[in-house]
Structures are given as C-alpha cells and as structure tokens.
Image 1: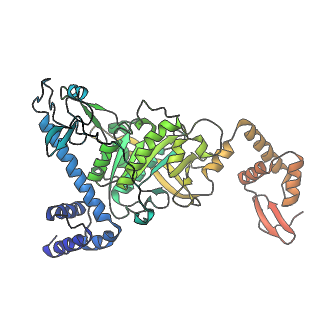
Image 2: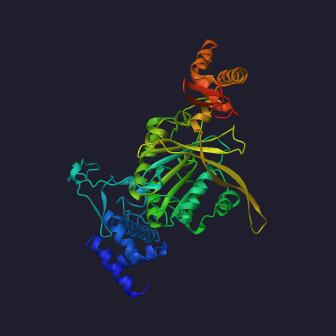
Image 3: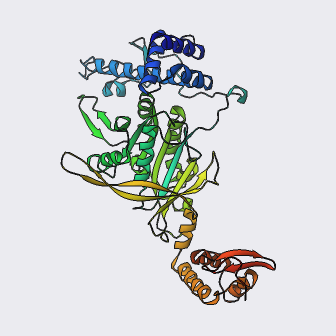
Length: 482
C-alpha cells in the first residue's frame, strides 16, 4: 500500500478509535486488516467504524498482547526457584490471580494475601478488610447500545451465540460443518463474513485429522491456512513439564477466547459438542450443563464468532427434532438456533434435508435445503484419500419434521401403509375431498395419516366449480369427475 491510502486509513481509524490508541497499535491493526485480504482500507474503515468494530478489534489486540505478556512473565518466573521449596516461580504472584506460583506457598498462605503490584509482591495487612470477590453492578438500559443481529450464515446461524446442528449418525453432519468451514475461509458463505475470508477453529475428537478432517477440508476447497486445530497443553507447576490433553469446556473457554480474538476467527466448530464437555459434568443434568453452555455463550458474545456444535438424535420415534437431541434440555434451551438434518428415504438420490427448527433471533419460515454426498479423491504423498464431499442441490418440499413423522413408530407405519393401500384402490378417478374425508373417517383413518398418505402418492387437490377434489396422479387438470 502506498503512503497516500495508508495515511488516509490512519486518519479514518483515529476518528473512530479512542484517544489513547498509539501509532503502533493503529499500525498493527491496519496490518492485520491487510493480512485478512482487505484491499481498500479507507472504504472498509469508513463502513465498519461507526458500528464499533475498530474499537472491538483494538481491544482484542490489546487483550492478546496482555495475554502474551503474562505468558512471558510466567515463563521468566519459572526459570529459577524463588522460595524455600525450590519450586520454579516460587512466591512470585501469578499476573492474573495474584497468588503464588508455588502450590505449597499457595497452600500455606491465605487466599488474597498475595497481590501483584507492578511486578512486585506484597502481603495484605492482617487487620485490613479482605478484598471482595463479588460485587453488584446496576446498569440502566439507557446506557446499553442496541445492536442488530449479525448472521454468520444469513438468517440461519447467528454470530455471538451458540447454535446446534443435530441429526442421526451417518447423514453427513460433519461434512456439512466442514462445508460451512470451507465457505467461511473463502469468504463465500452468505452472511456478515461474505467477501472477507476468516479463520475457523475446528475441534474434532471422533475423526483423525490426517486421515479424515484434513482430506475433507481439501475436498471442500477450504483455505487450510485459516483452519486451526485446537489443542490444550497442561504444565506441571513443580517440574515445568507439559503434556497434551483434550479441550475441556468450560475450563478452557477463557484461553479459547484469547486465541479466537488473536486470529480473527469467525466460527468455533465443535464436532461433536458433547465431546468437548468436561468429563466431570453430567450431560443429562440441566443445571450442570448450563455451567458449560452459558460460559460458551459468553465466549461467543465476547468474540462475536459463531459457535456451532454437532449433536446426535436419540432413538425415540418423536417427530419433533428438538425432543430428539441427546442430553439435557439445556442444550436446546441455551442455544439460540438449531438446524436439524435427516435423510429423506423417499428421495431417489438419497438426499438429506436441513431444516431450521429453532431460531430465537430470526425467522423460522426458512426454506428446507437438500444436499447429497459425493465421493472425492484427495491426492496425498501416499496415494489418494477417498472422502465424502457435500453438494447442495436446492430446496426441499419436505422438512425434517415431515421425514421424522413419516418414519414414526411401527403402529404409525402400519396405519399409513393401510391408508396408502386404501387410497390406491378407491381413488382411481377424482373424488370430492369432503366425500373422501368422510369415507376415511368411517374406516378409522386419522386425518393426519390421510394427509401423509396423499402426499406419498402424489394426490393433488384441485378447485372446481362445485368444490375441492382429490385427484390421483397421472390425470390431466380438469379431468371430468365421475
């Protein structure tokens, strides 16, 4: 970028940033935007400045710097023992908690005695009042700035919240999440990130990254530089040794938020969400699950990213997708949006259908989308890796609820089969709908069963001079009634 546009970008940025923003911070912020492939900085800043984005990005940048400084400080403190126990770090206070790094010193000292003061340590006077760990804050609504809902996937997956993608096994839920990931990294997903490629944190526990996740991302056309595998490392305080452990929510929410802001991540993909929950949490207990989901919702709100978790259906015959989601009811209560997926057994192409079954922040009358899974070969150094690739094929007339209802229980399936056989036999010519309904009622066929059987057979309704008629498939419109 030449000096002219750069100077103009700095001038516009200063208009919206706080007075304490330094030249270095503004320069780092603009460099980050350029790295995100934003070509026309002045136009971008003029558009994004009024809604507070520059302020949020600056705060994220500062948080990342503070976090990095804390890590450097801890690393330096761990170099040599500084207490009688010989523990790395010793009595040096943690930069955030103010408590000694040495666990023995912590155990021997009252909580709150050690506080950080410009890198030095001091003890609270024994007779002074303890520092409070909670305080009440009242904020009038007049001081809260309203914000519109922003959509990571337009009208379907909101930013700043937790959403679920639910369905049975073997229908391509992970491939669907991979496809969303690929589109976000290319900037092609309709929504607030369209035209601005962003990063995605992909947390997968059930599939191998080398054999499954990475090849699927390649097949979907993802920008691999923008997809991050989230790993957690624990450090033993006494020895300084480290080991890799699995992501655990809500324990790792704060560090995850720092990384999300640092890398400009648009979505956290949890495949599946249940595997990221701390193992000590009872996932069927509503109260315990809220201790996981609510911090996760705060992470989403604080970073402005989409949090999308995969969930499985149970094996009941319920036709309501929300009732089928495994685990506590907190899953569907706390999340703001739920997409349900089911395979349509009546479709010749083996398609799966996506329906919006919960949308607290937007519309529910969204079209049902269909997709099929194609085979794809991904070249590797050891030969081709064969994986699935999702392909959208347009809208579907049938919803997930329709498909689940059609599956039903064995008794419902028997009743529907009986009704279908009766309709095939009796409806060889158009018949007045009221007469057909009366006959069905006399035979004990429920109106809901008749409706589904008619849809299955392709029987259409036709308006005529003397009322509505049920017309079997294969007859021209206006065919004379007998």
